[in-house]
Every structure is written in C-alpha cells, then in structure tokens.
Image (cartoon, rainbow, N blue to C red; front, side, top):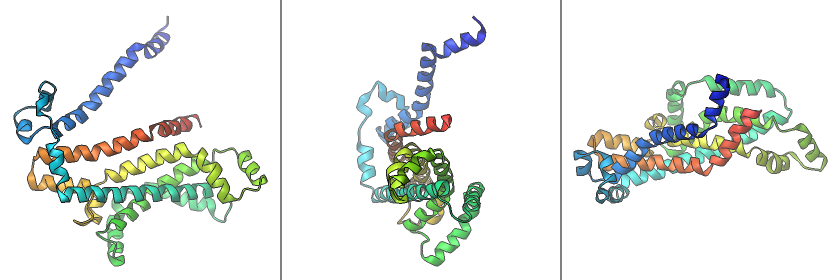
Length: 282
C-alpha cells in the first residue's frame, strides 16, 4: 500500500475520530473552566482551581448567578444586548436579502456599478468610520442610544451580507424563475415563495455571523452607547475596571454572555452546515 492510500485509510478510520474528540475536548476545556468558576464561590476560586469541583461537587451553587441577576446594571446590559443584536441581525438579513435578489435577477440602470461599490465597501475598516459617524449621530440625536448602535452595525454589516446573498441567489437556475413568471408570479411572490426558501442555508449562515459579531462587539458599543444603553460586553468591562479580579461577578457574566451565542449557533447549525456545503459545491 502506497503512503497516500495509507494516509487516506488512517483519516477514515477510528483514529481520526479519536483525534477530533481530543481536539474538541481541548477547545471545550476553557468553557468548562468558566462554567465551574461561575458556579463556585469567590473564596473557593481564590484558594483552588476550578477542576477541584469535579471531585468536590458541594462547591457548586447558583449563588453567583442569583447575585448577578439581582444586579440591575447587568440585567439592563443583558436586555440592551438583546435589543441591539436582534434588530441589527434582522435588519441586515431582510435588507441584504432584498438587495441580493435585486442585484442577482433584476435589471436596472447602473446595477453592476452599484454592486461593485458595495463590494468595495468591504475593504473599509470599521475604525475609519467611528469618528465621522459619531459626529453625525451627535447632530441627529442618535449618539449614546440603542438605535444609534443598531444603525452602525446594520450599515457596516450590509456590504458583506449583500455580497454573500447576491452570489448565492445568482446560482439559482434561471429556468426556475422563468417558469414561476410564466405561471403568473410577480417579483415579490417569486422572492418570498421561491428565492427565500432556496436561500435559507445562506440566510441562516448570514444571521449567525451577524448575530455573533454584534453580540460580542465591544468597540462600537464603547463609543456609541452610554451608561443606559451599554451592552453586556461593556458592562462586564466596567465591572472589571471597578472591582478588579472579582470572579464571582465576572465568571457568571462572561459565561452568560458566551452561552447565548452558543445556543444560537447550535439552533441554526443544520442550516449553517448546508450553506457551507452548498458554497463548497458551487
């Protein structure tokens, strides 16, 4: 057996599964450490490592989470994060889906040039627009508000979203769209009943990317959100600055901030994998 065939056989054997299992355990170890630290008291975290909870389960309790949820600043920040991430994700998906369909299948003057302009915006760093947009939002009364943070995320998320969905929609066979038009379907009906169902994997992938980016963002929120509209990332950073290494507050807050994106990812995992596989085939 030649070396290539031997290597192929090794990759398809149980050895690969064992290797992947080990890699998964290594990647999950920090998450497990954060979880156990969030369930231990401040005194236990100071005198021993989180792994001691595996042999002493009496250390584990939900007291830290109870205290965290009684903190009005943290609960308000969590609510602000939801109020920022959900609209910013929904608006990007809706607008990008409409624009992607228009760029892919509708004929209008300057379509290709406008699409090239959208693609060119992909290379513009977020940092370049922070100060000019902050000045504009200040004049419009949006600075320091949740709508201002949402609009910034929508504006900077749209170029990639339009590019992604346009390329995916363009792969739909033209014959399917022409058959739908011959059956009397208008553009809105074709978009809603044909294009959107076929583009569901790409839309789900986009929603995951956008939600994770907005949920975990701190740079934009630090500049555009005030104390009443700050998300969880900024609130935790403020807690760290005020109380230093207060694991009893930071660990449950960090785990709460982490577990929600993980739940969202696994909820859309099937559609995400379909989108990746479809992109690799096309």
